[in-house]
Amino acid sequence: MRIPYLAIPVSLLLAVHAGAQTTPYPSATPSSTVQVTAPAPGYDIWPHEQERVTGAYALSNGWRLAVEPYRDGIEARIDKRRPIRLVAVSADRFVSHDGNVEMEFNRGTHGTDMLMSYIPESRDPRLAQVIVIKATMAQR
Image (cartoon, one colour):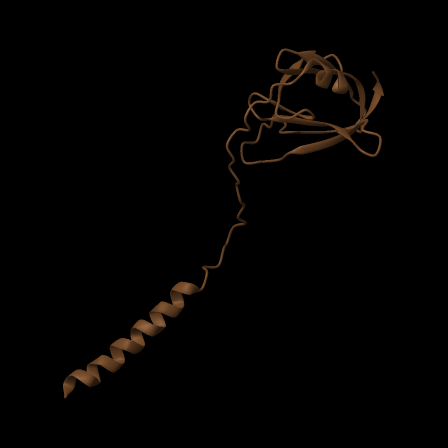
């Protein structure tokens, strides 16, 4: 007869323990989420598709962007800085080899807008940020 008396306290203890496991722990520090995706497959861009994005763009932060065709993508130069080579992911989207710069062209109602996002060089390794800049084509 002792078995039923022992079984009840043990089952209550297990039920309380199981309920505690479903409750999330409180967080003392802010948490963040990281999404990892595989690199996009390359896109065989045609010269006429490169010409559609070639030109000068006036960026919303005052910079000037010059875009020229380059082998499997484009070469973009901001002001007088060294050029950035981007490969085509689609006819309108280009990404740098390291994935830090992405440009999407032919946006907006007239197809003359561009959206650039990039990861800035940061001196603080704890800081993660992406900067997004809009642009309008200034000249073909």
